[in-house]
Amino acid sequence: MTSRQAGAALLTAMLTVALVASMAAGALWQQWRSVEVETAERARVQSLWVLTGALDWARLILREDARSGGADHLGEPWAVPLEEARLSTFLAAEKGVAVNTTDAASQAFLSGYITDLQGRLNVLNLVENSKPSEPAVRAFAKLFEKLGLPRNELATLVENLRFAQDTSPDNGSSRLAPLMPQRVGQLVWLGLSPRSLAILRPFITVLPMRTPVNLNTASAHVLFATIPGLDMAQAERLVTTRQFAHFRAISDAGKVIPDAAADLNETQHSVNSRFFEVLGRLRLDQTVVEEHSLVQRDGINVKTLWRDRGSSGLQTSPLQ
Image (cartoon, rainbow, N blue to C red; front, top):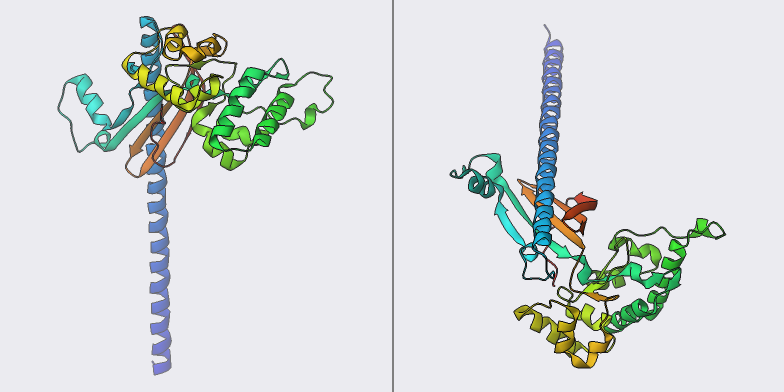
């Protein structure tokens, strides 16, 4: 064998080894990818099952709260947020056994909270019988002014909301009407800018029907907006007073602010709530899954109206 033939044989052998190594690496990568996809899918399914259980737990808390009766306020069990805790601690408490720190449950962390959405201004209150509702528009106008937001956006919001709700067959422009929003984030459809929406988000909500504001759970900004004769100092006084003793009736709030007592009425104000948002957050290994749910309570019946889930950053309970 000549030196040229030996060199060709050596080159062929090296190419063969490189080809086999490339194929082996490709097969190994495909196997690793399949394992990762299966692991991620299993974690996602497990997370959704746990969050479904957390939602059922929240509904049970709200149902038991309804059995006890009385006003809804921030001193009740449903208003206490669940700080992040190992899922295995709940299982251990139920079964009365020691926590096994080596199983998958010990690496899962659950947290969440329940928010009274009637502690916020309901956007759907802005229009009644296809016409702007004067009390609701006045409340939103006070809030816009307090937050330094452009009033023209409020006018656009009201008009587009009226347009979206007008489903009469003789409305020739019905095809051009914006869609009715079901989430706060969808209010950009009705003309709110992203900046204004971000500022308004803690104080407004979108509920399927007209609702009064719960005086026991509303923030000072919402109280200031929804009570015409109230200034910000009086709103903060209401918030401070209810921390020691919640309002059992609307008249209790009127005793704290006699000057604005005449502005309190059952159409716009209440001490009870029917709509709540439930947030559940599960951290499992590197996967974080959150679920937002809107629930409606009628008596002791608590039903889920919608659920949104997905991966996102850490959430904290909104200021009440």
